[in-house]
Amino acid sequence: MQTIVFDYDESLLAPGEEPLLRIAHFTNGAWEYPDQVLDIDGNQITVTVNGFSPFALTTVPVPPALAFMLPALGIIAARRNRGHS
View 1 (cartoon, rainbow, N blue to C red):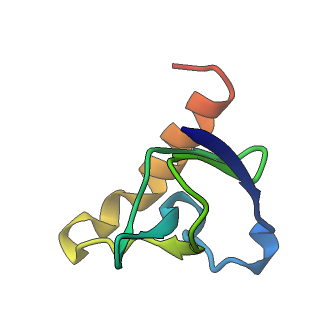
View 2 (cartoon, rainbow, N blue to C red; view 1 turned 30 degrees about the vertical axis):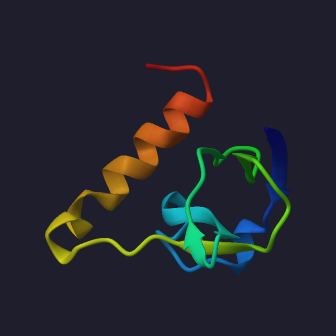
């Protein structure tokens, strides 16, 4: 297993998009989402993978029924990354 850290520039993202960021990894002919940690404060995504085939920075689509929760999810993720509960 390998751990890779990807940096991103949040100024290039649309409002509300940052909590949806994910790294996709192309393995065995398909895109997958490996285990990962999004660090909103540090603008990094850390993934653990078995190989170095192509990667892509993506956003995960959110079903319309859950879209109203996005602002709250961003606050929770930011607090967790700062060590608050």
